[in-house]
Amino acid sequence: MRALDRHCWSVSGEFRKLGELLDQDPDAIDDHLDLPGVLLYRFFSIPRRYWPALDVPPQVAAVCGTSLAQAVVWERFSYADPNVLLAGPGPALSSDAIHALADEEQTDRWFRRFAARPDHTFFAVTEPAKGSAATELTTTLRPATDGDGWVLNGEKTYVGNGARGQVGLVFCRRAPGPWGIEAALVEASSPGFSAELLPSVGLRGARISRMRFEDVRIPDRNLLGQHRRPTQRGLHGARQVFYRARPGIAAMAVGCAQAVCDHVRGQGVRDGGAGGDRLAAVEDRIAAIRRLIHRIAADIDGGLIDPHRIAAAKAGAARVAEDATVLAAELLGPASLLDDPWLEKVYRDVRAFEFMEGAGNVHLLSVFQGLLKGSGAGAVGPEGVR
Image (cartoon, rainbow, N blue to C red; front, side):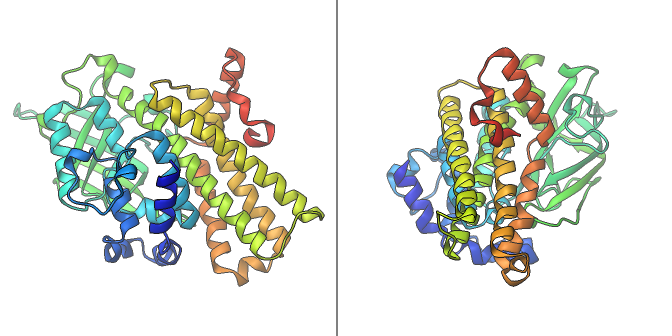
């Protein structure tokens, strides 16, 4: 993974300046789609058999698509600026759901599309007033009265790229109960589809959106998992995405936290004094959470998923990112948030990690359940998951 880390470092040099542009206008990414780092992110989760000729070292290409590589890439790119990752085109979160649910034709159609053009995608689960209760979703999928496919009705909110994506996955209810939930591929160009960008304080590259579906027609070929048992459809795909995405989100938070600590070091704060010792304590937490993320990611690649440890990593990473920015403002002085535009922006950005791929309290409950079961979910330590 060292070669991958070095490559990410070399291709992310322009991300911090680009992140400033995206904070003002997320669509500015369209002028930078040929940057090597943006291209790497776009093709990272696309199987290599679909790749065109890319200027990517073979040892880097060989690990693309793995969870451990994702943790390395997302941390390194987020060290520069996480908005570039979130604003960039590509299949993103939906790829894991495609692998988990789609048949061969759907899988091939999906990846050929994203290899051919720089489309954005969305992954729509959360609904108004439902929060993290995915099993309670009310967006409906009903057979079309004319017998041709399905009809989608409902609303989703807090969806990344919901108002920008050309296509994405929408989780909806076809029947009562947890096994009545389905995943459908939805084209944003479909009649009855509408979406609007929600105002956000930070991490604006994510384009957090609200989406509405009014009698949106879904062709039968766009309903995922029809060849699978009900227990292996719908929420099964969502869970696979969450299990694999949460270590990535944690890695993004760690990347931001490390960048803040390095920035403070660059301003002259050294070990030995009270401020230096407090900074070193945060850096120790970052290192511990990074090790946990890498162990979790390697386990996922080996087929072992521990939801409780994943929750510990995500909760701990989100907290340490916030703590790093608070400490930076204390050590550099409150005026630093006015005088230093980058620090002010990352201070806003990292607050989003608390709510991405499950809010912090949900993860803390999972950590508690893991401790009761003796899974070792609290290995990151009290400061990491508090």
